[in-house]
Length: 101
Image (cartoon, rainbow, N blue to C red):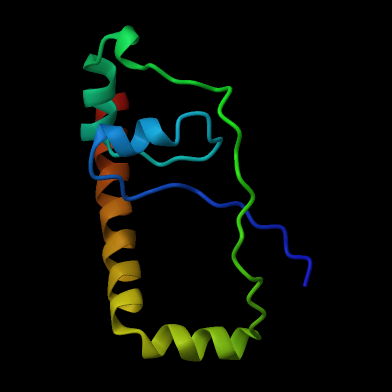
């Protein structure tokens, strides 16, 4: 279909998960984890940018919008987690606004 899609890493539970994706252009990091990263000594960030990256071996999934919406609606966990994630992002956005004020 040729859609331009950007994937953003999110819903991190600890700093190790964030560091594993260091170098990715799009990450959303909660204010609490952002603070934890800020407190880490720089030498704790032992990142090796020379590791070769592997291509994603997964098959391309082609769904129409209606097929996607049906499948998404049928997956209760997916729809519940999406709603939870949106509420969490909104709460973190308010916290970040307060930090920057």
